[in-house]
Length: 113
Image 1 (cartoon, rainbow, N blue to C red):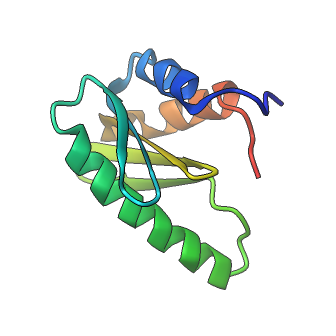
Image 2 (tube, rainbow, N blue to C red; image 1 turned 90 degrees about the vertical axis):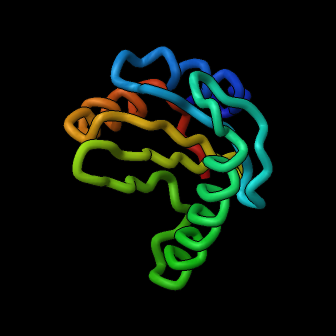
């Protein structure tokens, strides 16, 4: 377990995955912190901050504990949203690549919570 890895390092690791089109780092309040290959990172961070906060509250109510990841899957694209403390890292991928990217994230990102 790599508990002391900074979220910016996680963003760089995610962005290097070949299936990832873009990646954004924000926080649960919706603040934009950084982006790779994303022209509108502020909007992505704001929307995903809201989504992450809402899903975290729902997870608490359902007894899931700390929410780690959520996937928003459309017909051709998907957003993988990874929560690490207050950080929210979002990756845009092709819908067909979701399982492969989730497996890569499980292998490369530290467990938190």
